[in-house]
Amino acid sequence: MLCAMYLTRACVENPEPVNLFPKPILILIGIALLTATLFLQTGQAQSVALQITATPAPDRLAQPTLPAAPSQADYGAQEFWSRCLPCHGDRGQGLTDEFRETYPPEDRNCWLSGCHGARPYPDGWTIPAFVPPVIGAQALQRFPNAQALQEYICASMPYQWPGTLEEDTCWELTAFLLRQNGLWEANVELNETNAAQVVIFEPPPSSTPVPVATVNRKSDLIALTATILAAVILGLLVIFINGSKPRQ
Ligand code: HEC
View (spheres, rainbow, N blue to C red):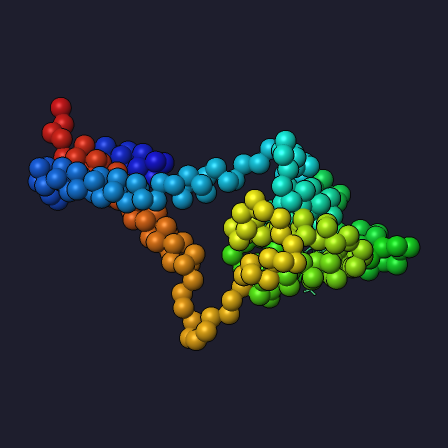
């Protein structure tokens, strides 16, 4: 917009604008571009809208509310919030710089604090430099199925007090992580009778097939770039048309 405004002013200052194309052709090209833009946007509108709505969050550190009839995964969300979120992030993204910004300034650098830095402290522990994501496209890839994930959580998490969780809590946390990763509907109870059948990550049998998610994201990007390009070209056309108007 700013750019277009700037260009308009430049054109106004030019006393004899150069008319590169006859007006009817410009209008036809404009209509064609507009149609193409609309066509591209219909398919991509949802994903773009999702990206936009996903950004603002009122209080990212607030405790999640429990629905009237909570599922195992809903209880898992509560457990995750109180036991895992400080390290694995409010969206399971891991201990990223962006997530640490949600904390008050004095609490943002956990590695410098007395209890989690290198300084000795009774009952303190050092937070590892990297805490992996547990929700998202790249998460949980070392686990073949839900059983393996549940066993890992029970044996190794939370990092500072491994092996302290109740078994039921481990199932709730597993159900929650599966649901957030789109791997489990959470409408039946997850337990040792069905967990081995819930596949988390299957290594590709041969070569390297392109994951579906990447393809989708790529086409999103292409559509977005095409839309922006079309919009810029349209803007320039408008400026040209205005510029070619006879001056009084
Ligand atoms: C003090 C920080 C901390 C807390 C709290 C914590 N974790 Fe972790 N978690 C880690 C670190 C560090 C690793 C990586 C350990 C490794 O690779 O050996 C990890 C790894 C994991 C993994 C494996 C991820 C992968 O793909 O390799 C899962 C699953 C997990 N944590 C779940 C949990 C759950 C559930 C809780 C809450 C009960 C929790 N964590 C609490 C730091 C933490």
